[in-house]
Image 1 (tube, rainbow, N blue to C red):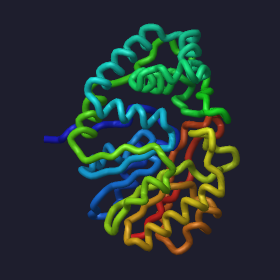
Image 2: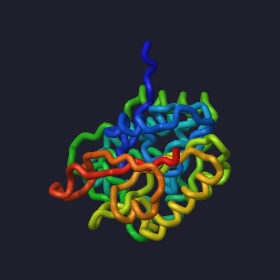
Image 3: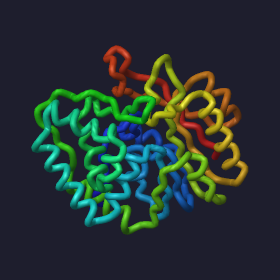
Length: 278
């Protein structure tokens, strides 16, 4: 009998569902604790469903959803909020919900399950399922102009809740370097950062962005983990800059389709690389 596995509950830039099979070809045969410092929608996490895991994302709104999903009472309240969003969905309503965080004091009074429902609703009702913020950290993607929106699959959210509560899964929202400080020999870390840019590729998951200096800092963390005997895998664009940063490690080049770009002519097949130290 095949056990049903959870699936990502949001569409996330750089999501890995379409290339999971390729990623799984290069996984270590065995490991202790699984770490994912840029978890996003959690495609690999939910496919592996490891018993011991530490997941992190610097996007606090996203990690709040994971927190809510790990508490049954809050999870049910979030779904009720989502039902309201679905019923009221319209362009005017979308912008009303989108602008809630512009008033910081008012936004801070919202419950965590209300914030979680807002995050999912905006992801499902915005243009192209994109999560993007401006320099002030405000979500700024426009409405997708669809009359109806389906915000969640109840069975899938229950699978996620069950996984998070029945296993040793630590949730964090901090810098990627903080997330992996506890790593020990034979643990496994999968880094799926905002990719090195191809022209004006999308990197605005948070107001800080993720530039070349961040890529360099990440490469240094990768190398430190390697010295500790941690098994490390990283995904990125196959650029000269990335080749230089990870020279000496194992490169596996794959083709992937990227549909997140707002300009149709910028979508299509791109060359990605999976870099391992084992």
